[in-house]
Amino acid sequence: MTYEDEQLSQLAGTLAEAGRPLPGEAGGRLAADWSGVVAEPAVRRLVAAAAGDGLLLTALLEGIRVEGVTDSPGRARTPRRVQEVVRATLRGAPAGSWQLLRVAAVLGRSCRLAELATMTGRNTAQMLPDLDALLDAGLLDWAGDDLVFRNELVWWAVLDALPPAVRQALRADRDRLRRGRAAPGAPRVADPSVEPVVPAELRRRIGLRSAAVASKHRPDAGGAWESFSGVERAIARLVAEGMTNRQIATRVRLSPHTVNYHLRGLFRRLGISSRAELVRHVPASSAA
Image (tube, rainbow, N blue to C red):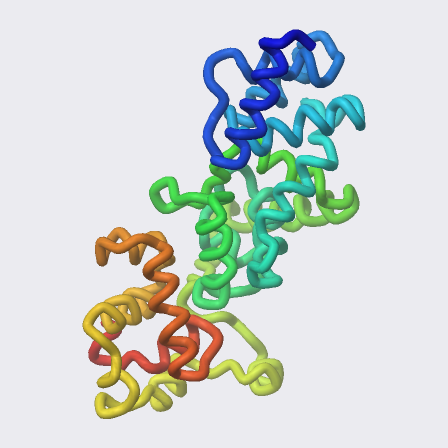
């Protein structure tokens, strides 16, 4: 490795820490040097999928050097090291975040929220903590009404991390779902974001209440709601509308970090641990 190439290597590490993209052709040159492989199409495609992300590119090149390049249908398989980096991004996130991300990957580079809810058997409110974690980690983002993987290499890595049998079963579930929706005369499926279809006995066991019952348990206006500041009330209302931290931040003109700070403060004061519980402290007249 020449002195100039060594500088590029150090630059990759620096950019990895800062989360900034590598400039120009640096990624391609590093791929050829680190992997010991002539920039064949399979390697070039992996490097391009990293989209210049320093952390992913560093993991990719080191993974290629150690593990080599393994074929996967239609492309080269992502090294295990890249999969580990993606998984580590969610360290400390809710346990269901990784599950949700894997199901989303099977649905495609982008997917509809309703389709993701149907595949996981959860409604939108139940998915909110996991969605927030994935959005805040920068793994997913909104593209209109669709959720999209911000980085193609991350999408591939999540798919490759699935055991083949699990990936095949999830794809079969996905295909059955889509065939059912496309069939002429197929009955309209209820929106899973409104109310989950759960048998009464299971509903009782997990403590899931219907929207009508939940509304009776909302605190009155003289309760905790009156102790909220104006900003806290605004954030709580938007949580009740189903918005993510990032969307709330845009609406109230604060950073996602500050929104998260206010939410944690509310959770602590109210002795709760979820957004769904917070919604029950928003008076019905204020959550419209």
